Amino acid sequence: MNILLFAAVDLVAIAVLAIGLYLPRHRRRDLVVSYFGINIGVFAVAAALSGSSVGIGMGLGLFGVLSIIRLRSTELEQHEIAYYFCALAIGLIAGMAPDPLWLPIALITLILLVMFAADGSKVLPRYRHQEIVLDRAVGGDEELHAYLSSVLPGARIHQCTVQQVDLVNDKTIVKVRFSAAAPSSGLGGPASARPVPPLPHTKPAGTALTAENHEVISQESR
Image 1 (cartoon, rainbow, N blue to C red):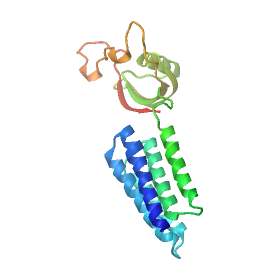
Image 2: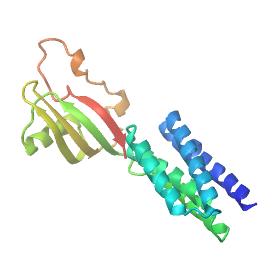
Image 3: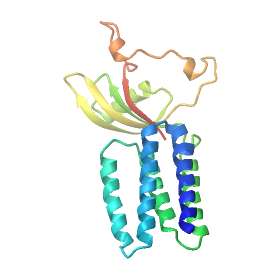
């Protein structure tokens, strides 16, 4: 009877995690299917091994190998990996069904509450992580910080790591962690109303390169 109860708890928990939390915030349907699949798979194996003579350590080891293969098969963001392991943990806790009865339910609830709070939009909303291609080769750290300050006006740069300096094509690829500037409410109007500078490939011939001619490769809000 307990296994049916914990199966229902597991289904409700993974639905809250994948559909209630992850999907509205990050909009990747393929990972929702993956979260459901890995959760139900771990639950089934953990439930089967918990009542058999086969050591549960062997089962967990096999799923550890499978999870490594899965994580290496495609590029995942760090928050997606966090959801991935939460789905694993929920399936494992529900499948093992430890005593007393309230303990697994409390642990699963704790996982959901932590993910709800940690991945919320109000947690460090202005922190950003971007990989940027600058339209000039920048060598020194001081020059790089000054140039990034002009590319990201009003932002507070916490860390920048140069990935590549191309002297032939005169460009620099750099990863930047920074705090975005607060939205302006002055005479200039909101940031969304300001004109967006043209991308480098749309720049007219003969126009001098400026700090605004940069390309953002990827961005992750933190």
